[in-house]
Every structure is written in C-alpha cells, then in structure tokens.
Image (tube, rainbow, N blue to C red; front, top):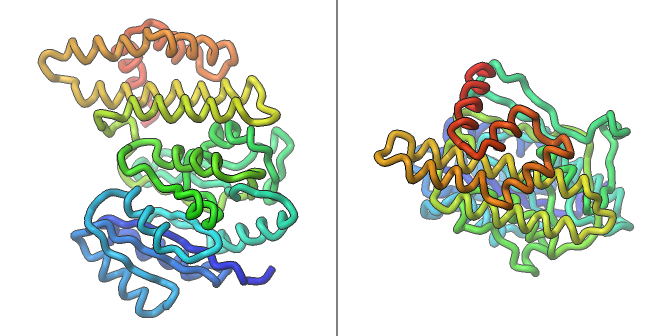
Length: 350
C-alpha cells in the first residue's frame, strides 16, 4: 500500500479544551501519514484554540479554523469545504481512534480497488465515563453469524439495516467517505436539525454513491460518553418530527435495495420505535411539572395510539425485536406507564 491518497480528517470543537489534546495526539500518531487534520473551532470561549494552535505550530498537517458558534453540523460543513483530500473522515473532539484507523481504511479501499465501494466503516467501542458501572461495549459484525474478527467484508447495501442494528450505521465518525462524491453532489450536514443529522447525512451520501458497504470487522474508534448528554434527555421542538421523517426515509431507501429482506425492514422499524419513544421521553421531561401538564400528556398518548406507531409496534413484537415488557408498556397507549417503568429500570441499571 502506498500513501498517494490524501485523507482529510475533520474535527469540530466547542470548548473542548479538557479532552482535545488526547484526540489530536491520536491523529498525529496515525500510522498512515498522508493526512490533513482540519480542526473547526465553533466559537469556543475556552482555551481550545490555543491548545490546537500549539499543535499546529509543530505539525504542518494541522489547520485550525475559527468560526462563530453555529453548531456541529455547520462546523463539519466548513470542514468539507476546506478539505482537499481524496477521502474524508469525521471525528469528535473528545473521542479517540486507534492509531491504525486511517491505514486500515486505506488498506480496505486498496483491497477492493476493482470494486465499487460507497464507503468503508469500522467497528466501535462505546466507553462510558459518565457511569463507571457500565462496562465498555464492543460493536462489530457478530461471530455467531459467521463473521471473523479482523477480516474485511464487502456488504450489499441492504446490510445498512444490520449495521444500524449493531449501532454502526447511524454515526459518521466510524466511516471513511469519498470526498469527491460529497463535493460533486453537494452533500452537507443539515444545520436545521438537532437529532439524526449523522443518519440523514449517510442516507444523502448513499443516494449519491454506488457500490458496496465496506466493513472492517475491528473496533477501531472509541466513542466516549463523558456526561449525561443522551438524546433522550435533550429537547428541541422539532426533534420528534425530524426523527419520523428521517426514519421513514431510511425505511423507504432500504426497501429499494436489492436483496432486501423482511427482517431488514422490521429491524429498522424497531429502531424507529426506540428513537420515537426517546423523543417522547424528551418531551415528557421538558413539560413535567408544568401546569397544565395534561396537554402534553394527551399529545404523548396520541403518539402511542397513532395507527403508524401501533402497527409498527405489533410488527416489531411479532418479529421478536422488542422485549415483551417494553411492548406491553407501550401497548397500553399511556405514556406515563411506559415512563414509570423505564425510569424504574434505569434506576436499577444505574
């Protein structure tokens, strides 16, 4: 493998001074050297720019670009505009890739040089620093289904559902994309939405690119949870609408793929149910304690009793893609019942 291909690594940061040094070090130490590291400062007010600039003064591959605070999607879009590589990789400022991540991406593209490959993805390790009682969890293709750890696999496009089930599709930080396709097609992150922007970007990208999904069956990216910042505890007024639109589109895209199976579709519907209820939890937490709270509760129950939700819920249950207890709680059509038992379960789990 030669190093003729330039890989652009785009890393937005907002007040990331506490952790960004480790992330930058993991990029500087990459075994594949032909990279450019583009750090987009999204209007930070801490010392992160100073830290990044110090590294940039020692490594000419690093560029630091400061913008006004417009959010992570805007920062990534700035990175796309500035990138000069053949390929592009996105990274968060508090995560750490393995030092051979980029090399593994390039080896995979080289291995499949005679094939059309849309993107190459890798496994991930989820590390929870927020709750030390939660063990690290590794996500790769399952050995029980015949996949071998460390092997590379060309997957047909209908496997997007399987990757989503394994928590490997909806992220952009564990993928290497063809930058020419992104620029020629004008693919950008949607700056108007607050949840699901990674998933939407991936669907936009696949609609404009042909070929297989390349999978490196190794966990090469640490996704680190440092605080209670899950989607279920955040709230934006359009989150529920956006979640529905994105998943409906994902399911429709999946249905159009060759070799798609009924299981592929029901897997996506189970994920849709999961994220749909996450959005309802966010709404519940936002309005809990308000007077009158009855209006919000009516709206939540209306969602659970909607024809689309109930039909999907039954389909997912028949396919055994949801636990019996969770199914029964949601089937009541009363959100407070679901929330009570969800809260109780999470309290026990820690």
